[in-house]
Image (cartoon, rainbow, N blue to C red):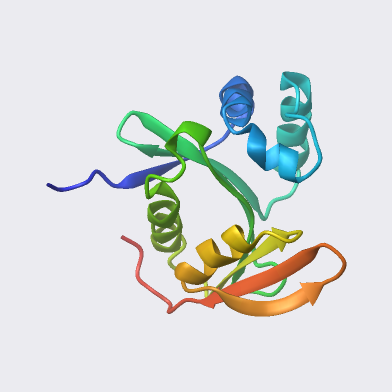
Length: 160
C-alpha cells in the first residue's frame, strides 16, 4: 500500500489557532523545557516575530488532510547551505507511530539545495538523541550547559 507524501504548508498569521491547538496536543514538549503551553496570544506574537527573519521558515506538515505537525527552521544558519531545525513537532496523539522519521525524510526532500541539517537537543534526553541518530545525525558540538548539537550532511539534490 502506497503512503501519501508529507506536504509542507507555509504558516501565516491565520494559522496561529491551528498551531496553538497543535501545541496543546503536545504538552510534553513544553514540559521538558520547563514551560507551560503558550497561550494563543503568545503563539501569535511568536509567529509575528518569526516573520521578520527572512531566513526563518515555519510550516505545517500534512499527509493528505491529516495535520501531522509543524516544523520551524532557519536557512543558511549557521553557515551558507546549512539548515538549523529549531523545532520539528509531531502532534502528541501521533507520536510513536513512525511519523517523526517520515517527517525528517520529507524535510530533507523539501530542502533540495541544503548541504547540512543541524538540530539541538535540549538537556539530558537520550530518547531524542537516539531519534536523531537513527535519522543519520551525528554529534557535532556541545553548547553547555543544556544543549547538544547534531548534524547530518546532505547531498545536493534536484528539487522534486
